[in-house]
Figure 1 (spheres, rainbow, N blue to C red):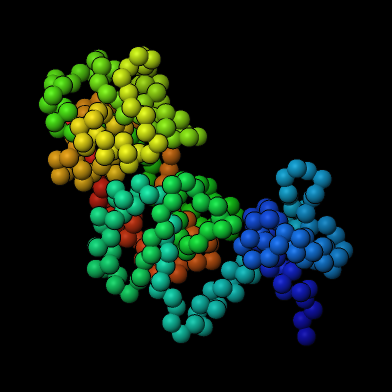
Figure 2 (cartoon, rainbow, N blue to C red; figure 1 turned 180 degrees about the vertical axis):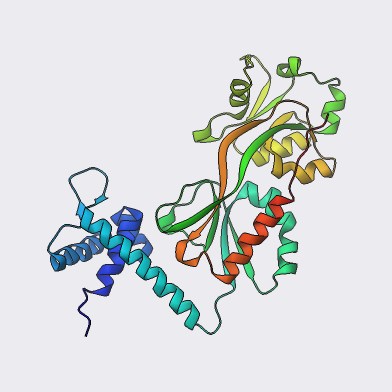
Length: 300
């Protein structure tokens, strides 16, 4: 007979070690923070040593705790894979948590292709405006810019590149549109919270002084800026892949002005033990295939 500590305590410890947070571990496991602390204490009593260093502000693992966490993560991953193999009909219903801008401007127009290629996978979309709280996450996969903690698989789908766009009617009304005179045009500025204002960033990257008296309209979301530009209100900075179809359909034109690479990455993420699930693998492969076919060329 194997001598093991309580399996529930091991499960709680693995979640707390992976998330580096007792409260988030409790949320993931649907138990209180005090219940998490109780399970951790019982495990520490079993091993006769501390597993977490509580002397610092941030929760950190002791060397023994780190050793145990690494082994448990691999063990739980193997157990999850074994259970999946033993399951007669693995679930083909998946929820993808995705930024609203990515979903509306890129994913939705292509979703019929995924449904045609993989009718056996039922994909539910959960749109978010900001990076979701992993402790309360209701989804199997994410498309996010948030770096994932240990225990998650992540891969870069694409790096953000912003290009100036406006409607054909706006360009015609202000022809010829000169970069030297760009501050005379209506700039549609997106206030992206932690990322700041996009047009001032564009000016800084391109060593262009921004006049405080330049005409502008501030909006809170890139979708508003894109639609405002398409309606002829002014010039927006938009992710190239998001306006690919708008440009192809003639709703927008890409101005022959400098672009900027923001350093922001769109990441595909899922729990590590599920990265090779057949249904999730189909979504990952399809996303990469579609993005490989996405290309924006600036006009001469």
